[in-house]
Image 1 (cartoon, rainbow, N blue to C red):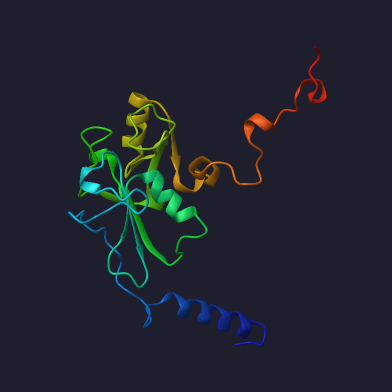
Image 2: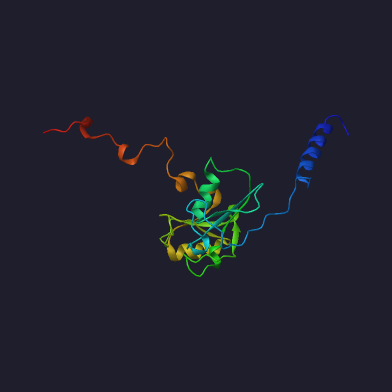
Length: 187
């Protein structure tokens, strides 16, 4: 090896060593089954009694997932700065296997970041005004959007403002426009 290629070869070996299984490597996380004691993190409702798509987030150091009562709550959990960031995996209901928009199958999950989402649909939402409907297959998401309206999008395209609302820096809509005539009313 020449002096010029030695640093590149060393760097490549170090990078590859970091990718292989090591003592900290673990088995892939699989979705958990919804049990009678699965309760939504934010609403405290039993998931078995809650309509619509659901979510589960698996965290390092926890044997049970954090259950979420909607796909929107799952996004919120992943986006909120105060929630744990030791996420091993996040899953949402695969609504492509649902019999209706409010009937998420208990055993059909898709990895949240790999799912296709229908946003802005007029399908009934369980607790929020704008549910995100997740699908494992793009064709199923497009068929749902054709029937119920909305746009088909990917996980990375959905913004915190859409899920959490405007940040504290954003002015309220009512205060965005100045009062007419400098705030003085003529009599």
